[in-house]
Image 1 (cartoon, helix red, strand yellow):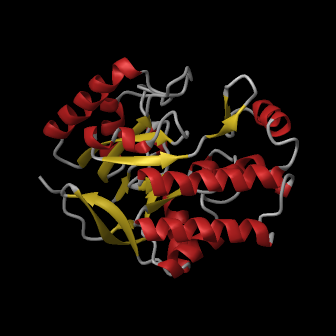
Image 2 (cartoon, rainbow, N blue to C red):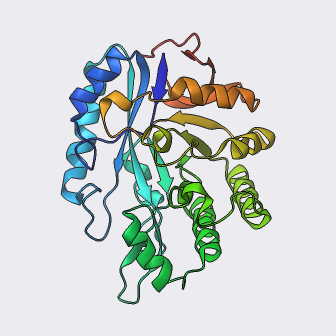
Length: 287
């Protein structure tokens, strides 16, 4: 039995409908399922939900919750933080929870927001035009924006904390063991701890072969354990078959770091649940 709260549907860039995802979650014995399609943005992006579809998305998830007996179903969004443009706090009153993520770092001269996890060519364009080829500045700004997001909008969950590393294959752009990087991560974790946010351990980069480690990396997971920051295990699924992809392996990483409980939604509230490599222990679906 597992839970997953980072799930994308065909309302955004996911491949399948809510109904099909619920059916596959049932097969996989998922007991608590949260949908988190990309929230609308104030500019055009193919991978995010269009604003007119938001109400239908919320209604469809709530209807699925009414009829499903094998699992608990929750309505969430993955919302971007872009200063002065959009924030996870914009959606809090409409849904059960919100994942706050940083996908954009500053702007081009023409006002276009720079997407840091799109195609590598797009990444290089902003890296050169905005930051003049200084990767350290890029990473520090990315983490600064993440801290801003946590302080200003207090998302329930901080999404893929160190996702910037997906552009750092084979440590080609920066050294993830460098003291400046680790100090900036630790500063960010302190802000997260003070805000009481949950940090997701996201497996998508590994099973998509975009990273060699979970987001965040194992050394950061050890820091989460040291600071007693709550974690949830997420797959960032864009296809139903990925709902619990790499979960046994990620659970092992958590356990070795000293994390004995993961945070899940149960009975409408976040709570800590014991787990092992086989899933959540002694879970009872609330109705």
